[in-house]
Image 1 (cartoon, rainbow, N blue to C red):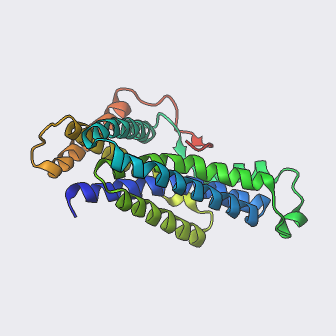
Image 2 (cartoon, rainbow, N blue to C red):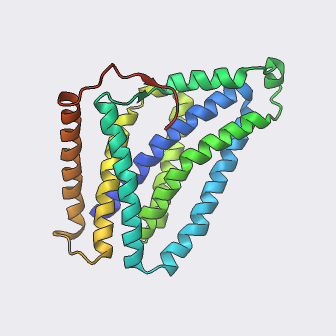
Image 3 (tube, helix red, strand yellow):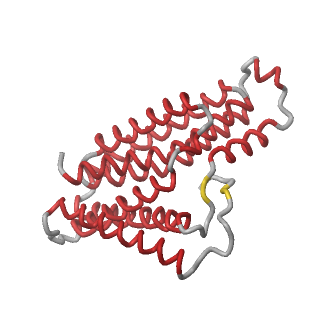
Length: 259
């Protein structure tokens, strides 16, 4: 595999894993409080809808849009996404915004969904509209960003199948691990993963935008590694600067919502 293909696989896999951990938290909370049948059906429908979007949008992008124009647009989108992930990861690492706590998110979601629910009805596994809607919304909203990344990275170099497979593997692995470890999702180093994915997306964004504008990068695909090093250094410097020059006014609180 070329350097760009390896980075593509890692970026899509990492982004998909992070988003699916958050989605899994919601699905598990919905299943526990409202019934597993409705929660799994909602999650399954969301996955089908997202897959249909990739199929419907990805094919025209790859075959109908000129590659240079596509790379400029895709590169710009990836750069915006990457810098946003990187900004949040830097602020979390420096203590300026709250760190995600999936266990707390789980507990609050369960408490909210369990209000007024008949435990007997849950045991009978009847369909529950609220449980279905919550699971669907959780998977669909978290998966939308994954779809955008898959479409962007996959279409920019005609590697839609590779990007889709990377996302699929991440979803399957997160689901398996989630089943094994049950609700202990707070052990996942989410912020470190977001930092890594943000660096990769930002690097890919600049690389593809330059390619589309007919910039000749030194070393071709290998220059992606240099961009990753540059963004990594900038992130480390940003964290150090925020901690020393602009320290957080109070200890980081635990995030109680998904973002």
